[in-house]
Image 1 (cartoon, rainbow, N blue to C red):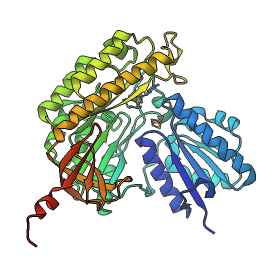
Image 2 (tube, protein in one colour):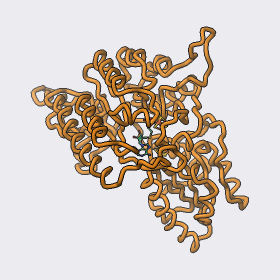
Image 3 (cartoon, rainbow, N blue to C red):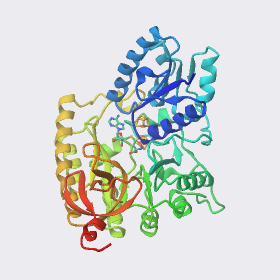
Image 4 (cartoon, protein in one colour):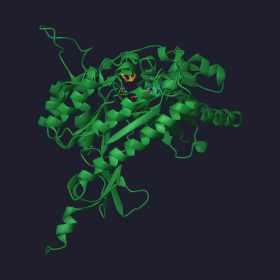
Length: 450
Ligand code: SAH
Ligand code: SF4
Ligand code: F3S
């Protein structure tokens, strides 16, 4: 009789990539995926703790399944990811029904952990460990676009952030292993890859130096190493750090046709005092210079970022600097969040915390501006022909395909739903965060014979 599993994923792309690998492990072990978690014999929650609300969500899910386990003792409950790493043993005490609590570094070792469960153990796997080179085949959600991890962990010390605690030290994968994975993706028909790292500019720092003291491998070198895998039409990478972002990297993006004109470079705050308190290691001026350089080489590039409002001590005037930077840069998209104190981070202990109402008010004002700025940025697509990679079908209108421009704008395409096609699309409607258009072939096709 086959056993069924269900995975629920919270958080960022790293977690989504880890979930795909863990699903691959379970497939290999002969488990079958099932859509309804109440039908599953194994439920795996891959968790996020970047903000308090992300963490709390996990506990409400867990409570429900822990109850179900009392009726069905054969149910296996696994908590993976960042809450698991943060809480470790404490999580077992809080939810004794759990079978496995495993940190992100153990994603590729899920099979070993489940073998221990079969022997009747309750497993906590949160010790720092070398991440196993990916030997299992991930079960990927998309057939077109794939995540490729290049560096795990983060060595930065941003004073608000839990990621270094829960993801551990930076560990770069070998360039050859990365290239092999991309070649295999191309053979399976994938058209787009996104290279992943929390601080992707750190790629290669742990892979040694040359005799002259320079790193043997950098993100820029990696792009040159992998850009020409036949069949891969689009290459993206996230997340960039302004502290380490180089002009050489921009030049590589401009020189390599597969690398898309989209940069995700979180700035977090527009105020230099706040940036210093966050220990981000750059100034607002440096950030603006990076964007100017990008626009010098790639005038049409899209720029997106993350920002935090209500960091401890942020005054109204300092918050205004963030608004000002958003207007100055003209972001295509911005992920915004109210500061959330996280366990074990320096800023959580400071006594100059900002009241919730103030944070919420700032968040609303920032989001309002972001929507305006994004709508302005979208205007440039009106009437243009953009290359769209069809990734799926519009859930609200099955006659429309859904994909993205090279610059990452979500685009709905009338009458073209064949997943994996790259189509030139004449843009007919623009909105703040999405576009609609028609394939150019069908426009010109109207006047053609045969
Ligand atoms: N490595 C990336 C981002 C990782 S976390 C970087 O350095 O930019 C993703 C985003 O979550 C961050 O960019 C930040 O904007 C937000 N974030 C992280 N910690 C937070 C906290 N304590 N409160 C609110 N937002 C936070
Ligand atoms: Fe967190 Fe900073 Fe590392 Fe990004 S660079 S993951 S914000 S510590
Ligand atoms: Fe969340 Fe962990 Fe990613 S805390 S944002 S899932 S690295």
